[in-house]
Image (tube, rainbow, N blue to C red; front, top):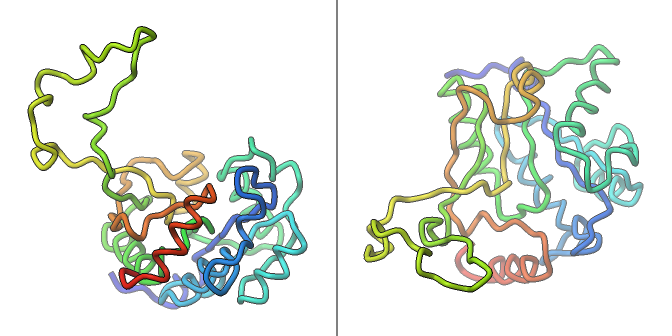
Length: 238
């Protein structure tokens, strides 16, 4: 599908970066290799053939300053009511859409890039958007293969027994014989804005998965995750 310049101007790319992270304090601006964590996503987005502008949604003046240093726009500081642990991505995105609508600026598509996925690069963003337009999708969501099959998982009762932990159909199967399962990796979310507003999120009819390699799918939430990302960036694998 050919994309014209007007379509590119209709893509609203958002990187949400609140300052109140609990498990890894100020993780969004923590220095990863040689730049703040959020900078990895900003630079990846700006290298995309599809993306013209990047909007960072933050409640922090410090975060805003850093984001703008790396080429993002921060049109306003997010209200504190949208920055606590109960705030949803939908609420944050809707707030930005409404902000521009009040200025008579409209968009057709939304791209959400979490700053906690620093190994997701412009190639991944372009491939996901290629898929979105090729499929004429309502949404595309990035996933990666599960590291361990959920078929080998179960709850454990209070007495600790594992008598029924695995079903009889799979207990003697090798891992390579199990069906592949995929999980959300949090790296890329794309949708038509009209449908996003209708379904209040990215899951809707005519949605497609963009499959990413697990090595690029690290999602930084803890110090362990951060150290793993640092090691991967120093290695020959990335």
